[in-house]
Length: 116
Image 1 (cartoon, helix red, strand yellow):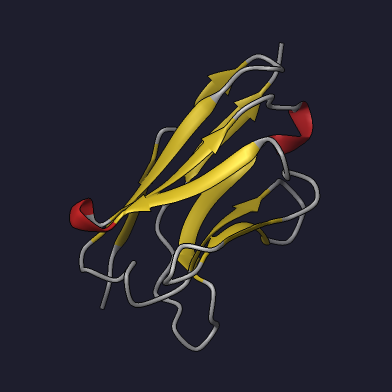
Image 2 (image 1 turned 45 degrees about the vertical axis):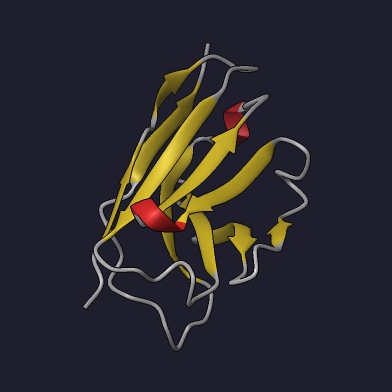
């Protein structure tokens, strides 16, 4: 079973930036399409960014142009660079596989709070 550990969240003012990291316990990123998800209070978890095995990226309309997903296969680490943050980006952020049939247990996530 793969373990996923997210970090890098925090409190930031609107317009600020954060870089999230997700470290996996195995070499999975070159095998599986991965994604960053987020869940705001009272809302369902949503997929906001994806990266395929060959490095193609995709974004939800709400974050397009502001967020960038990337990975370092050698370090088994997935990243999410978040710029121009808005209060509506406030959520707990998680990483996991994109394919439902591949998903592993969810990590603890990392809290991102955008507030002045």
